[in-house]
Length: 398
Image 1 (cartoon, rainbow, N blue to C red):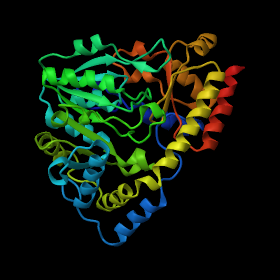
Image 2: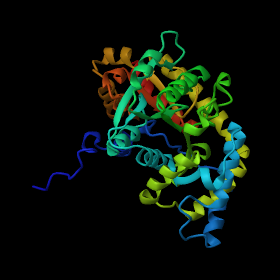
Image 3: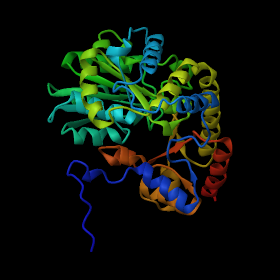
Image 4: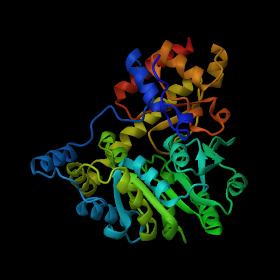
């Protein structure tokens, strides 16, 4: 008998990430993959050409630990343009291996064991794992579907109750994966006021900052730009979502110098630096962002509209998606008819009997019962992929 897997106590509760599980099953079963949030189309040629040029120009050795100066300058200029805040490329910007590493580096570098970290559930799954690896304590605030049909929201009293003198960080994701929620100015102000009252910092994961579809949510509001928050906010983003190049894993943090010191202290021992030629290409991408992003947003918005309409027609209750790659829908009525107990059973039924892969969102909750009636679909796909998924989902109507 082979030895049992050797996994630390901190990581053992989390198992294999649901994204790996569902994509592997989609491949094995020939299902249409509306589960994992990666495009099945290519990013812009001008960025790929820049990477090829950098390779041939022999930019192939280690980059500086904080990132290439040319990329840090581009990130700083972009941050200032979007927020109105100054950013020093040398003191405030760190290039990381995707936003996922930036999240881990922020938690590891800024927290001590026993510190409390406030996060909204459902959450991107690396949040809770990183908090556990840091020896910190997660405090959870639920985003719940609102009876008004306006999407997901939180109870301000529940948010306040999550704070204490031990609160070190708030993990904030807006636009939000998996709900598609874009936090309003009022909601951000409520979070900011509590951070200032309790002396907490914010790690703002804003990888979907350009992928906002509701005109009422534009322009995207960065919590760092609110009064009193510039000195206590770490703003994270990445190239992957904005340029449909998720496999490149080029992310970054922008933070005041005293917080950047902690992030870099961790980053240097996590990855040290990320691929040099891709950093050169990322700088080109940010300099030509408007040549690509508006058309991407239009295409994603069209996919969202088509998939939302068809899911509604099939009997799902579709919650509004203001941004990101994702639609959250309630499957309870369909599952009741099929005799399925929860989101995991429903997603297993979809992939095994319908031929469509989706994500069961209960894995993104500290309290899984809050997500058992929900299912997440990704629409960052070719129109033909969306149509193939819809055709297969139509069998649910039978």
